[in-house]
Amino acid sequence: MTDSTFDVLSLTDEARNIVLDAMAGEQPNEGLGLFIEVTGTQGNGYAYDLYFSDVADAPEGAVIGRDGDVTIVIPAASIDRLKGSRLEFASAGGGGLVLVNPNHPTPQEMNPGVPAEILALGIESELARRAVAVLDEQVNPSIASHGGRADLVALDTESNVAYIKMSGGCQGCSMSRLTLTQGIETALRDAIPELTDVRDVTDHASGVNPFYADAH
Image (tube, rainbow, N blue to C red; front, side, top):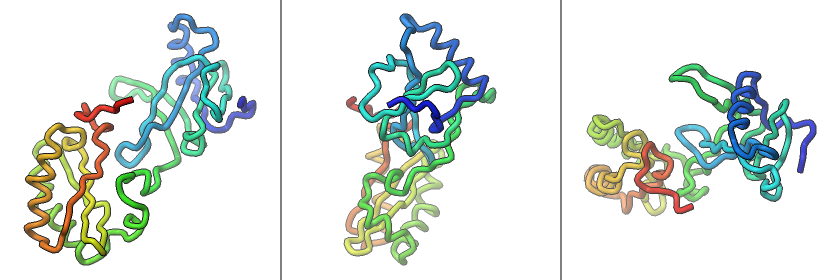
């Protein structure tokens, strides 16, 4: 649908001019819109995809609006996640467009590999505190040399299964499975024999230079 009072996302004047200049270089450019969608999570926020495509190809349920001379298309699943966002130009790091979003992923979005009921348990149990201590005192100092880090995101207190998320140099690394089984899992099981399993719930496809590519 077309929203004439488009309030999902706005562009600063500088960002709008950059988008219009880029759009003018596309051939053909008639009917093009700026598509913006949430593709997942990265760090503590969302990951995004911005691209030009024919507005006529907008998926069902997408909201279509205008900011000045720019037509913006936001797929249905991204509307609430982008509500109130602003696309602006940042000069730092060589300059580029930056999406400033007041919305943040829910714990379930951040950790899709962990059942919601287990996430709700938190990591305050005695066993979870012991696991965190092992990661902070033994594991993370050893993998910090290549920018890696491992964090406990959940612990099932009934089955004693630990859910681990890797970040930095470990996210998307082709050696991440080896790091988990021979490093992190070994350290945790040696220190905490009660653990029955250690599961990696990292989204390796969104890491820097990911080894695991999205099939789509």
